[in-house]
Picture 1 (cartoon, helix red, strand yellow):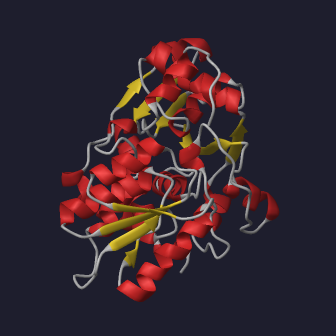
Picture 2 (cartoon, helix red, strand yellow; picture 1 turned 120 degrees about the vertical axis):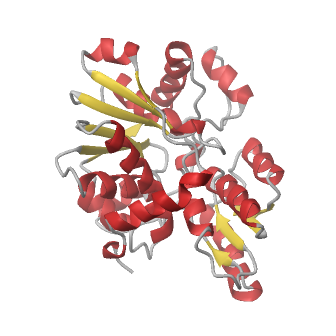
Length: 325
C-alpha cells in the first residue's frame, strides 16, 4: 500500500459518493481575525457536520464501499471517528463495535452508544485498544475501518479540500488539525494536486503528537499519550504506517505544536469572538494564529474540525476556572 493508491480522482469519487449523506462545508470570513491580522481569514465550519466533526466523511466513504459479506465494522477511536463510524454503520444497517482507551472522555462514549454502537474500553492507550479490534477482525469476521490509515478514509477527508477550493479558488494557506494524518493527508492531496503553491500547515498539541515526533525521527515512532484539551488529536500513527506518514512528509509544509494554555485560548476566542463552541482539537487553528505560531497568508482558511467537548469543561475554560483533564 502506498500513497500512489490515493489520487485526486479517488477524492472526487468519494465526494460524489458521500454528498447525499453529509452537510456541505460552510466557509465564512472571520471579521475579528481578519481585522486583527489585516488579511482575509476564513473559517471552515466543519463542526456543523451531522456528528459534530469531520470524521463522518471518511467513515461514510468507507462504509459505503463495504463488502456485502461483512459481519460488522470496528475501529479504534478517541471519539470522533467512533461516532462517525457508528452513525455510518447505523445508516447502512451494519453492526458496529468501537474499541477505546480509558483516556476517552465520557461524553464521547455516550454519544457513540447513543448511535447504536457497542463500545469496548481496553487499556490506557489506543495501541492496547487496537488488540481487541484486531481480535474482532480475526475471530468474528468484522471489517476494520481505521481512523486515518486507509485509502477510503483519506479520500473521504480529502473532500474537504475539494470544497475549500471550490468555494475559495484563490486561497493560499490552509490550517488543518494534525493527528494520525488522515485529515491533513486528504486535504493536502486534494488541494496540492490542483494548486501546488498553497501552504498546508498542520496544527497539534505539545502533549503527545505522534505524527510530529515521527516526522522529526524520520520514521513512525511511539509517544506517550497524555491528557490534553486536544484529546481528539491523541493516539499513535502505527509503527507500520505506510500512508499518512509519507503524505505528511511530502505534502505538508509546516507542523506547529501548541501548549495547553494556547489551546484553551483558542477555545475561548472561538466562543467569545466567533460565538462558536469548539473542542480543543477543533480550535487549534485559531489558537496557532493567536499564539503567533503561524503567519497567515493573504487568503487563509482555518478548519474548525469539531465541537464535541464536554460542556462542563468548556464552561470552566471560558470562565478561566481551574479544570482537570
